[in-house]
Image (cartoon, rainbow, N blue to C red):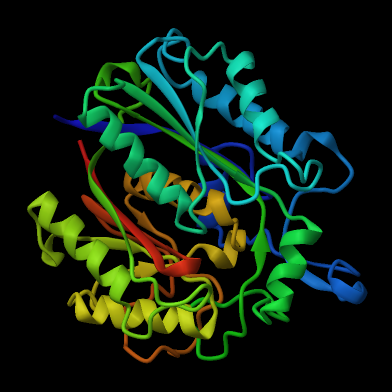
Length: 361
């Protein structure tokens, strides 16, 4: 069975559509800015965040506006079909305004607003949630349970999230620099994105790509620290390639996780080296968006689709000097390249890792 993926949309500080976001990336524009007195004890912190004190960028508003755009890119009756499901990827939901039940109200409102026949499913599996949600959608479609699944990811910055990462000493004192020798940690970001997966190519207004395969794995290394051997990432990518029936030689580009922490970036370099992928062009988008947690995998997959449509590799913002334990092929400048097959990876707390493959249809 062929599974198609497209109708992508992104709302971020860089734009309100996937096309606007890709345009900003093509100009190497970053959404990261310094915010005064935003951290614990009024510390100034770099974020990629929306304008404050406006409901336009609340958790619920982001999801609704993003999904309205997606609905305009597919057949009009899809959202209300019995064979359609919505999957939501998030790590914290609307914890900024509702810390008792940060996702229940939002899920109910989405079902009512878009006249969904089924209650949305929530995937919350640390920072690999987005890629796992997409893989889950593909598995449902292959099993014949649904024909079309909208996968949306959203997370917003809150004191809870900020203080938590500060407690781990994981937040950078400058805009994050994934895979760079002088990286000092993550930059948090907020945003929302969505993609549509379907067994029917004809529902898309614009030519979709194909979802080929995707898996996840957990090496259970540590509650917050990644495996030094890259075991979880190595295993999921290896399994994804095996199920897809291809090798690393078929991959044109890797959209990596790249959080810009010392341990994460080293882990990824080790895993890709073990997979014989050290030569494949690779980037991280965290230098543009910051780490958007549960939205990251959806945002980055949507940009993969845009990169494939435009046959353009986007440089890894913040990278200047090699600084990982194993050498990998970091994209240092935008360049044109025919992109037929793309690998997207994600990693998260607790040893969770996920990967998926996209191909032109």
